[in-house]
Image (tube, rainbow, N blue to C red):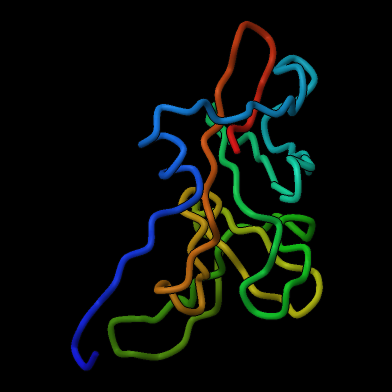
Length: 141
């Protein structure tokens, strides 16, 4: 099959296509999950990291793409950028607005808004939908 690409739909896409409901797993009361907080939710056989940042919720597989570590359980840190002067000399480093979470096993960093591995943007954690019903926050898996 040289040159042939096959796309396999996700489990959730198959259920949705069949009109079957996805399970909603309770994460927390929104009032108990302040900005910058996170929760790890066990949803069946999946572990999911749910983050609350700048009023939005983001949820990703807690399985690191590198070695299977707990990707969503490490440090939250802003992206570090090198400052280069117009003459191309190094001027130091600063923190950018982009927030990352770091797998505690080997330091793989992921963008909190996209789930992309910042070292190789082609790699991306599985993303989950987050819904809010009143004060309750759920992840759909």
